[in-house]
Length: 193
Ligand code: ADP
Ligand code: MG
Ligand code: MG
Image 1 (spheres, rainbow, N blue to C red):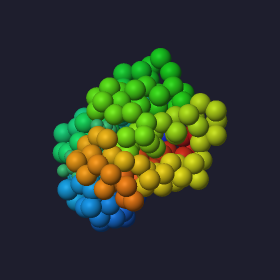
Image 2 (image 1 turned 135 degrees about the horizontal axis):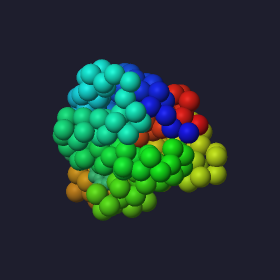
Image 3 (image 1 turned 60 degrees about the vertical axis):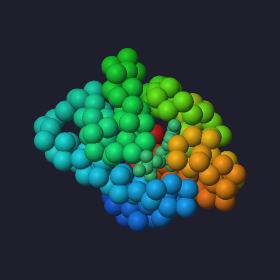
Image 4 (image 1 turned 90 degrees about the vertical axis):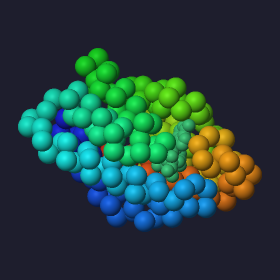
């Protein structure tokens, strides 16, 4: 069950992973993008922490909505509105259900709708989709998440900047898939499942 306390812990852990891996994420974005993914995510997570610091005892819906708004306004780049949409969908639905499998599924549907990408397009969806499938069978693990992100290396990019390279995008990890790997690892570490 996702709670406000878990989301708070989750965001702190995600922020620290993004801080540690900022240079690496931007490096991954260099051969197949514009080299800014780590900086974008860092700006976004600083915004998330600043906004969360201003809340006192927020309920689940407020905290999820605050995360969404900070990501949408601060990340810049394609990833901001996509991550933002994911948290907004969770905020919209968290009064009906607090089950991770259901909330992440709705979040994934939001990402797909917003960006028009699907599984296999070499995007963050290639981590989100297997993560949701694993949550549905109670089998999400760090190993599965890492394998999903690693799997983007062999894919041809069909959406986002990397798609301009076509076949030449093969052999490179997708930066948004790797930041999503950190997001799900942080969720597990925060006690989300
Ligand atoms: P930008 O490409 O605008 O510089 P970022 O570098 O912050 O934005 O984010 C790039 C990441 O966003 C990609 O690695 C990919 O995972 C994700 N992405 C881009 N376009 C889409 C899309 N249409 N659907 C899902 N994810 C996408
Ligand atoms: Mg980029
Ligand atoms: Mg950019």
